[in-house]
Length: 420
Image 1 (cartoon, rainbow, N blue to C red):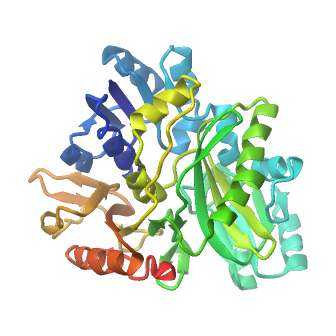
Image 2 (image 1 turned 90 degrees about the vertical axis):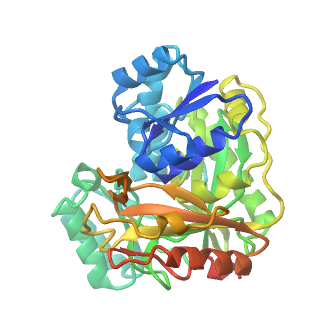
């Protein structure tokens, strides 16, 4: 098979690399991809992830067996719909189904309707009304832009000053453009967070190994929210019983509810969860593989990834098996200043010194005229190490991160400490 992955980040690098492990896959193309992917024999295609005409034309020329659409923006813009209309198999939800990620307000109303446990919330389009509600509720409180904001449209405010600033930024300053014209304010939930992704086809749900992401920019879960500074899988302190409860009370009702809503979901449903005293509750739904969770979860997949996706596309039962032992740890190298202002074009030093047994997933990188890798985004790359336990993983991975030390970049030193 020749396959096409749509997207350009670390998630798409991980998806493409895993597909290439299949004996039935000859080539994996990535559109537009990034220069670092070519180191893993992934073929780059200079077509934008939302260029439906260009993507369909390429897929037909190359006799692509199926497409996987990675990021949320092309999903919500209907790229899967376009592929399907052209008779090309595409794995990912249609635009209607992707709304579970595209609108926090829709997701909240959906969860209320189908009795899926989540925090109480209210939605606002008027700043004065939102501010009055904020004054009434007090802190801690969570403020979310309704639409897509690249993982940065959420503020967990512990102080009122922070909450008011977030509200002003979103509703008055339009920090996230149209995405924050509508804002969801929800109760703060205390507990342990974890990510549960599942392959979904209609009402059929096939859970993956769970992971834990680290959203805050700095050590000790301090600083602004980012797209994720590192992750690990599985999560030893979240029991299998809790995972099974989340599947039965959250994922299955969500999949069934989407079918009942006329929004048949085929793709990866991501549930960002928190284990509260009352059991697991939903923080957010995403309509695709998480980033950086994918980079630590897919290496744990033992079954044939390409065969698994093909089975789902053919409405067959997939073989979904994950490693039962060990742990996989991933740490993000980010540009100094991320998630706020940062410079691009800074040279990555030490990349050639990374040990061969370390997974390297490129996200915001490109090669310059001298073939040196330089930064081209906020999250630059992620290093991954599989080990017997977290202590071993951290002991082996962090010396590799130190090889990339450079004033232009930073990384968190505490990824995975909760699992030691």
